[in-house]
Image 1: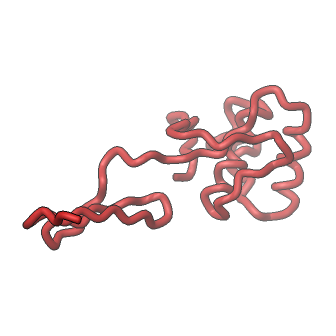
Image 2: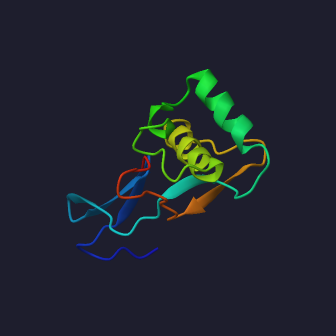
Image 3: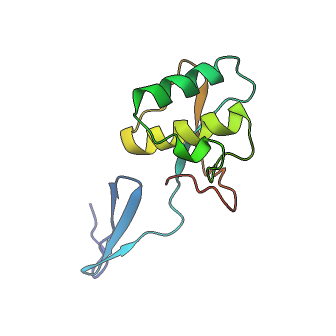
Length: 117
């Protein structure tokens, strides 16, 4: 194994952040993939998924309620994606009975509704 003098690169993954260690300095690594848990469009059980997540209290459903920042667009696909992603970012699981998929760089945020990163 050959070591290049003066340059040590070490990528560390911590949560959704990555850092690079170079010559004794730590700096954020740019262009690191972000993952989003989103609804599979048109799935028939999305309303049930939404109701179950809201009833469980595992995520804050206030933003998707009428008047909330994420109420529009008022679709089950959008509301489920918002909740699935909020749950995923907190618990690192994207398993909602086959109604969700983990996507890379799939930020569905709107100007008024910011999806959790």
